[in-house]
Length: 178
Picture 1 (tube, rainbow, N blue to C red):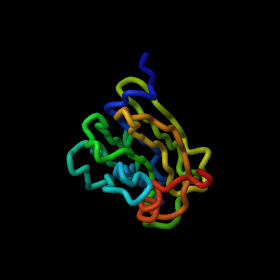
Picture 2: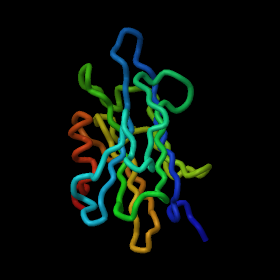
Picture 3: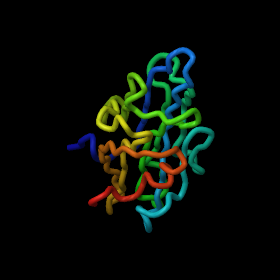
Picture 4: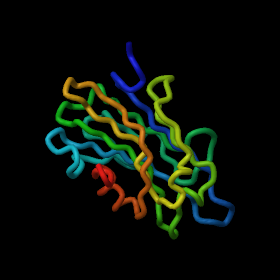
């Protein structure tokens, strides 16, 4: 029997949030995917996918990018085609970072934040960042390829305090105590 945690092929990560109040700097959240090589799944990422980029092989793409949170529904959407990702990669970590251009902003300061991770019509995870209100970024999902080649999903929300660059460098590290 198939479960939502096994045989994951194509995933969509969606993030939404409310625009900042009138006259305030824009709220800008970004989805970041970090892909790790099989021989060093907790080292440096082989590559990152975020705004203005995509995976070299086209397997991870940012389909929608928002700098303000304006609009209906989900403001940022990223697609991961894990079934097409080279066997050279065994781990993909997904994070959401708040741009810090205009001063420090945290998830608790931005209204109606939400992240949803879906495979087709199946929701793998949903979160509103309420467990990490003082964080400026958070890891929201981890996909790991097992020894048989099947992708497994690990639902996680781990907060981080720092800018998008330092988050991208640290988001794939082992959680404290692991």
